[in-house]
Length: 154
Image (cartoon, rainbow, N blue to C red; front, side, top):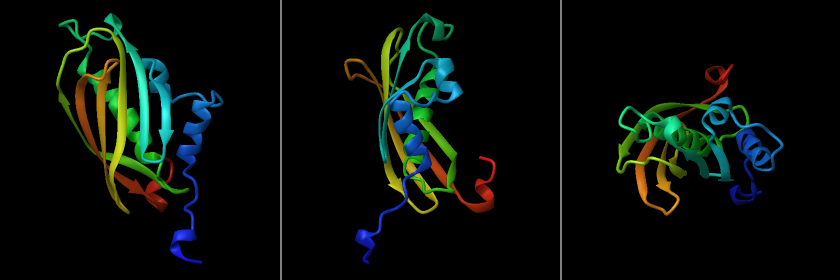
């Protein structure tokens, strides 16, 4: 059997995402709290959406930057997890965000893509967009895969 015919076992996280999309599994608590919905998942690509408004505003009246970080972090975390093997988990080493335009209300979308998935460290990119595809924020995350004892209890 060649390497091309050996398939990697499905990620338990990806299976969970598929159940979420079918309405068979509840989203993570933070997604429920903020109203973040998973709308697309494939290995290495995840899209999440949420409705934003005054209830998530900062003192200036625009969407709080932490909320933009939350939806991007959720999408990038699921994106990275979608490619993990059974028994693996991960942690975020770094998250960088560029805020590019203010938002007051409406639906926003976080579109996360795996840029580089290495054996231990990977890079994920996320574009947070308005409903009419205007770029609100550009976000990157460096993640580290944990295995064995490092993955215990995570």
